[in-house]
Amino acid sequence: MAQQMCPAYMPENLARDLCSKPGAEQLAALLRNYWRSRGYEVKASVVEVGFFQQARTVVYAVRSDMVNALPKGMING
Image (cartoon, rainbow, N blue to C red; front, side, top):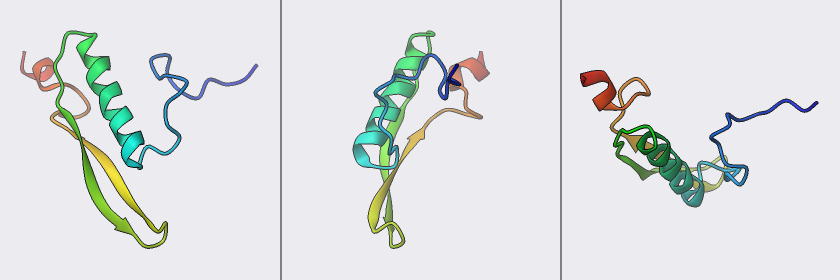
């Protein structure tokens, strides 16, 4: 039996390259939707990190307002 690589809430069509702009946008949406379904509002946006010469590409990342991987509302009350 094959080992499941991702948790059950991860879509099978999740981009393989999460550092590309489309992949990072998909990941940000996944974060927002995951926490929204649990009653929390999370701000997640895509930012350009910069050009990496070794990969010869621009890399993108997801930034959020979460603290220690948890929504601020979960920590504050």
